[in-house]
Length: 278
Ligand SMILES: O=C(O)C(=O)C[C@H](O)C(=O)CO
Ligand SMILES: [Zn+2]
Image (cartoon, rainbow, N blue to C red; front, top):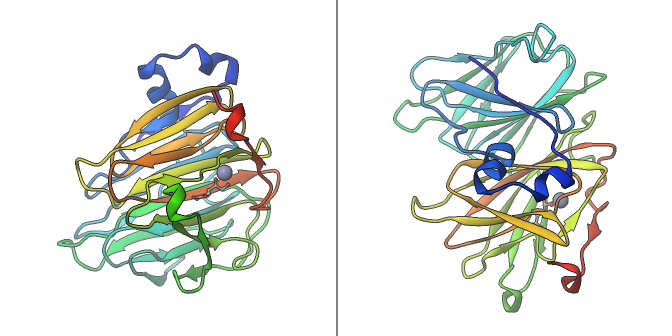
């Protein structure tokens, strides 16, 4: 496995980027490869993001030079969100079932992590987000029913959506990772609109559950210097704290959001007034 590195980009640099440069820095085009694990190291809050898609055999989480510690989770925690068929995450020899839309929290200090699919005909797709951690909290399996559910938006604003907070201080203790899933209701297109920034935290989005022809127009940038990225199914966005992050889809979609940084306060957002967007 090689782990590409994404440097932290300043808002001043990003203003000058063309489409290709924006995509190279803020989009991960391929998260899942059958039978493989693939990870990207971002200098945004030193977050590692990627996917593991086991087929008949298991996949082992191995460490890399970029991580600087052995084992991988010696000084990190990890959220594992399954968006595929049923599978298992084996944590220091203990198998935890992960059905579709289950999330497993794997704490710092874990020695050995393995990923398995129940059936290679319907493989699990484990979306992985790992952030630095200073102590070990208990392992958790969090289902959609366990998560905090928020019903957001209005049909008249085309932004009705169900947001579930899985890894959140009310549900699961972590060092810094916060993670959940937002599903856009039929007939709505917008996520996270009205939009916000939160310079205290980095955010990552994995868009999924999209038809192959569907695209999400994901908006980023400073509120008065917006840009967009055209995103296909199972691609991920890196969103620095200075950037807005929101999107509109041409068809059905959902996304996993995750955050890391100075606090775990989901409501610590700086909302942007519509008249300030450019
Ligand atoms: O649709 C939404 O609203 C969200 O999913 C909000 C994001 O998770 C977010 O930006 C949290 O800071
Ligand atoms: Zn946000």
